[in-house]
Length: 103
Image (cartoon, rainbow, N blue to C red; front, side, top):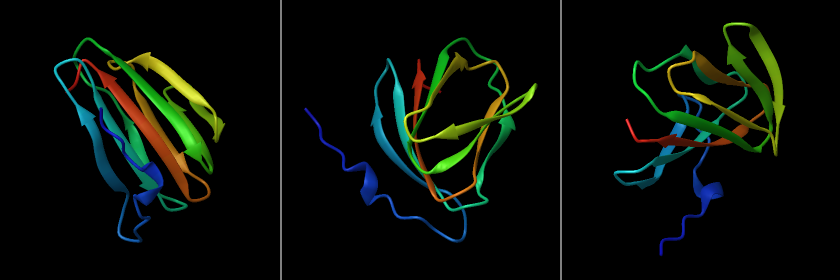
């Protein structure tokens, strides 16, 4: 068993802060802390697998080829990892990302 304190991941003015929470042959879990205005641009990965973006704190937007969808604490995006995706922070925002299988 492993316990990680997700809110210990400090916000940085120089760019998103990232902490690897867990990595195994089955999945990878990453904790991102974004200051307002930061994010991950629209991108995709040319592999099979799934992605989960869970907003833990703050407000922002999920990004897709169709546009932007408002996102707030408690919202979760699930999609194939090959589908273009991204996230942008409107306020300081924490996001838990799960990738299965890991990349």
